[in-house]
Image (cartoon, rainbow, N blue to C red; front, side):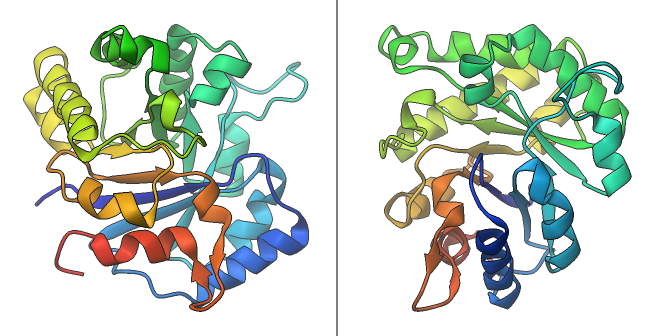
Length: 260
């Protein structure tokens, strides 16, 4: 069997109770491809996780946007993996570039967080990606490999890991990696996994793309052999009023690999 397509919506630090309920209602009313073909996950802020999980249709899963690196305790403001498991939250996003740049999370720290979350039973969307300066310096793959190695050094089982390649220069900027650029990094990353982890992990691990994905860009991106889905930010909050569906799913669903 091929790798199941993955569509994630990262709501980041946005929303009110009313807005979140409106988005959930929209998602519940929308048409989504079979779960045999696509895995759909949305990631609301912590405070809305119980509401979203409780009201959202079962075909769509939820993810937290982050979690702490160890068991709970005297860590004011943090949320532990154990708490997420207790809430029945199956997924967590770790290593997002905004956490790395704004919160100073190192690759080693992200690797530790991924390992701990997996050990507690969570599935992980692990983010990697380079800045514009790093791309222009020709060090994209060196950066992505270093970030991935920090994870590989800490874990043995990749079954519950999805790798999200998110070039920092394309997040929220309107700039999108061309299909060729995305495919090149995804293919190189898969080769890195084959050489440094195992051929089996390289073949089975989903590598998804994130960074200003739009209706204009997703068709060709989804057609690349090593692009296994998308992690979408701002577009996942927008609703197509005509079709009354979340724009991110209207954008992506028509372009999923056949059959749908």
